[in-house]
Length: 63
Ligand SMILES: [Zn+2]
Image 1 (tube, rainbow, N blue to C red):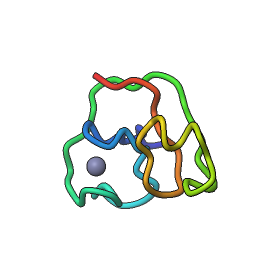
Image 2 (cartoon, rainbow, N blue to C red; image 1 turned 30 degrees about the horizontal axis):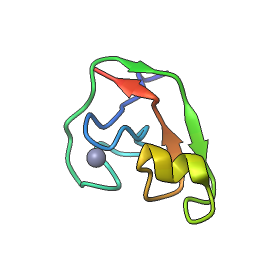
Image 3 (spheres, protein in one colour; image 1 turned 120 degrees about the vertical axis):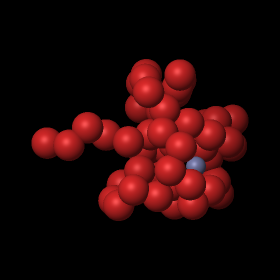
């Protein structure tokens, strides 16, 4: 299984391909901690707090 890619800026786990679905860049975090699954960013308090604009899986901390 390929190593998971996490965008260093948006903290989203990139679901497919190489480009971040939010910022369209390929700037990966080297280390990612934790997972926050966002299903409905419009209604999720945690998603707003984490700054998660779209549905997906986000890291809680990146480095
Ligand atoms: Zn990004």
